[in-house]
Length: 319
Image (cartoon, rainbow, N blue to C red; front, top):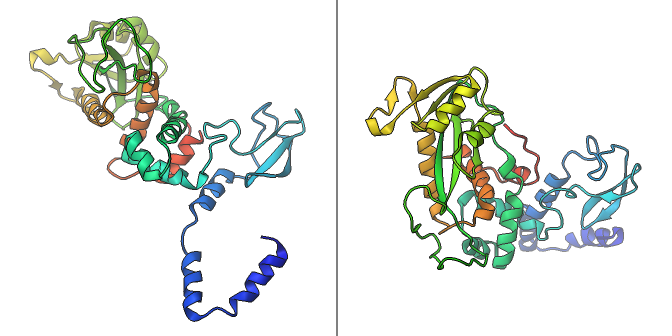
């Protein structure tokens, strides 16, 4: 609104009836989610901001575009805004982004999300995976104390892809083979007793892949509890850390403080949560694992939309 229009609008307020004044006040108290999202995106201002193209901090303000402050880098000469280089760059309908985070918090399917947000299913799908693109990288960087590790297996799905060599399977159906064959994707989950959690998608449950996954995240003085897997035992031996194997087939699942009930309960919650989607594409499995970590970390309280939007923008570091 231009200055003369603003002054005319203010002058017109004097002519409003009491009922009209109440209506104006009611409108002013309605939260403007679009403005709230905009303020969150711009939070921090230019201080501490660097060019996403060359990482230079020599920036100057360069007008506005699409309601966002634009900056120009004096080093490389390119322009950008606060969304440039983030998973949410160039997405539209920003006033619905907090509502999108609530949809993620509730774990709605694509069809349910599209209906809730009043957008096309293709938009709901695109938003889901843009919002989850950064989330799958946010996981515990180091596990300490007593840590539990175990594999779980997620049914492989080629949803959305053309597959040859096998008959189609109902979405969310069952594998034709039992156990841990090629129809399943192994996921290694590791958790410590403080609630820290991380996971890894494996090609095979081999000592080499387990060792590669666990070496960076286990503290040198950690105590590792696993099932009776020989690959886990070999990896623990090579890591040189204290290891306790709990063999469920013997009936001894707990020995004092040593057990894997924490990680097994996590597996159960994960699979119950995944079941609602009737099969998830293996291509996006890492996104769903990151999504569930965020949801499970805040249970039973719901995730604050502001925090979840920061997560989608990549502003929440590994923890």
